[in-house]
Length: 67
Image (tube, rainbow, N blue to C red; front, top):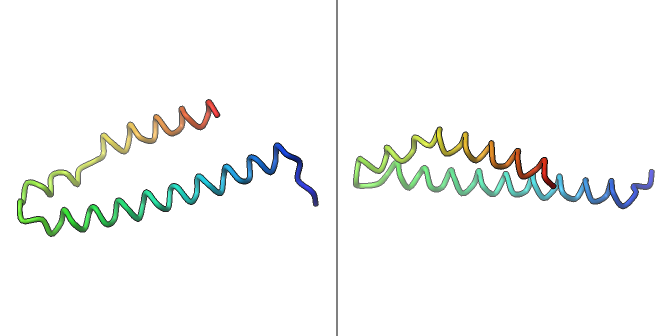
C-alpha cells in the first residue's frame, strides 16, 4: 500500500506527537523524583499539578485542532 503525501504527513505528525508525549513523561517523572527527595518539604506541594495538566491538555487539543 502506498501512502499519499497527506497520509504520510499525518503519519509522521502522529509519530512526532507520540515521541514528544514520551519525552514529556520522562522529564515529568525525573522532576517528580527530585521533588520527592527535596530537603524543603514544601517543594512536595509542587507535585499537585492537576490545574496545570488540565490547562496543558486544553491547549494541546486546541493546538492540534488548528494544525
